[in-house]
Length: 211
Image (tube, rainbow, N blue to C red):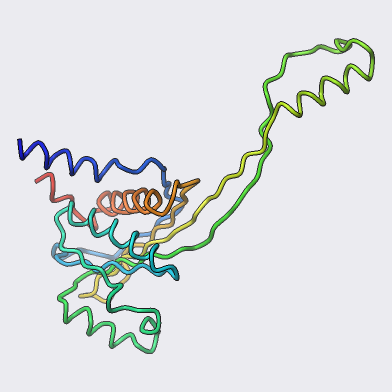
């Protein structure tokens, strides 16, 4: 019974998101050769909103742990004032102290809002099929226009970058688009699932849960 509960919980983690995130672009270092499996991965979320940062961070950590990795948050020691180019050496020392051998950095690229008109259902009319001349044509098309509606969509574009700290090398960059997420939880679940699935497909990470 306990095993069945555990399996159900793991499945729930992997399919709980309702929004779909699609990969819009990706890059992997051609000359990269993984000499060993990563053991501890740090998750860095670049977000001005603390709540969003924590939610996205937790989503990635949960999924990385499901895959069999030791994953740690960075929100408690990598605050905004610390993440600067001149602090690169200090940040490296922070990671080494925590025995981190890989880092995934997540950031927002842009948010795009669009409004489009969705035409209502219409009945086919042939030429001259409007009773009353121009008035019939005007009346039909006016009502057809009013049968439609305006639909607003929001697309969120995010990016992930994966670094091998032992080599000091960027080995993966992935850009995504998520449309109309129900909220930050929905967005983070969909985003983390898409990114980690691609990293496994690209053989940068391994799904240790199936071994």
